[in-house]
Length: 101
Image (cartoon, rainbow, N blue to C red; front, side):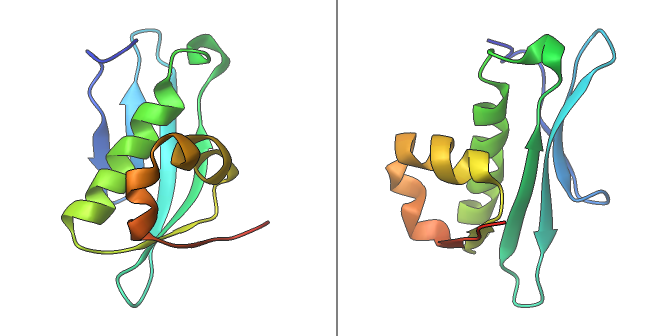
C-alpha cells in the first residue's frame, strides 16, 4: 500500500491528489455546491497504481473532509457509492444521496 505517498487536497483544482515517483497522479474530483455540500464526482487511478487501494485512500480522505467540516456529500462517483461506501458504512450519515450518471 502507498501510505507513504501523501494525499494533498488541491482546493484550487477541487480534487484530492496522490503523485507518484514515476510522475503518475491519482485523484478524486469534487465540487463544493452553493449550500456547502460536496459532490464527489470522479475517482481516477492510473494503470501503474491500480490494485493498490489508492481509490479507497482517496475516498477516505474526501469523506473525512466532509465529516470534519460537518457537511454532507452527493456521490456522483460510482466507485465511492458501489465499492467504498459498503465497506465503510459509518460514513453513510454524511451522504445525501448517490447520483446515477
